[in-house]
Amino acid sequence: MRFTISSDFACSREVQQKVMAEVEKHNYCDAARFAIKLALEEAIVNAIKHGNQLDPAKKVIIEANVTDQQTLLTVEDEGAGFERESVPDPRDPENLFKASGRGILLIESYMNQVTWSKHGRRLTMCRRNEPDAPAPRPT
Amino acid sequence: MPQITTPSLIIDELKGIYVCEFTSSRILDETNIKEIGDALSKLVDGRESPRILLDFLNVDHLSSAALGMLINVNNRVKQRKGQLRLCKIRPQILEVFAITKLNRLFKILPTREEAMQSFTTH
Picture 1 (cartoon, rainbow over the protein chains, first blue to last red):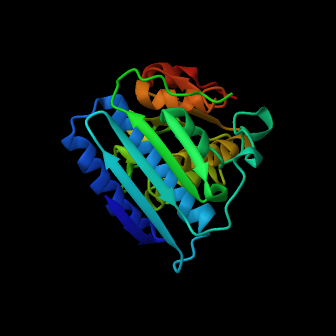
Picture 2: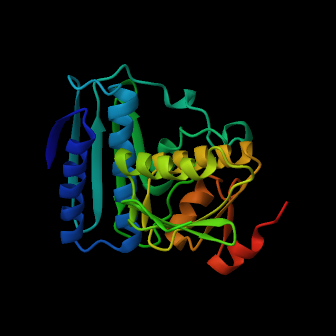
């Protein structure tokens, strides 16, 4: 599945529904479904808001490859990119009261593999269809 | 206070505590989150020591934007020297709070009764 949408949350909602419908077809366990839904939501919102800066002229490309075993997702924006290492840890005491900055932590916690490429504009993530698949917990 | 109903919340006042029950199972999208944030802010702003209880029984998904909204509400409550409690959070959602360490920021209790009893009077 491949979708190209403008930086619009209504469009992203449709894409998420289509991807999750595909996940449902493959009888994913509850934990994997929860993880994929959350990570996809966070990835697309980040791409629209922080990547494309809500610019409706800029696109977000979403690809989903769903099998019985795993779901592979890529989300790519047309923004300026970012360095993953430069994003502060929202769990640090000085950041705990801040209202934003938790999307990446959730993606990396719930997906089994996460890779940033194209200077942070492209996110590739994979979640296996396993109830107790150990999600990496970045420290 | 009569019951207040919004598209995503039912708000009752019990013993001076605003009990807010989420009616939608997903606190995800921007419109939904803003509506909830606005409704909760109205309970806080202009009040001395507001006491607010959020009941998560019906919530099975929430995003980092929803967490941000809850943090903003918590900050406003603290500014007014009030108290905020969260209760009946499902294990999957509780894990989101734990991963982000927000379980240390918010006072989370298993049941509504325990949450009600945890409020202190000034």
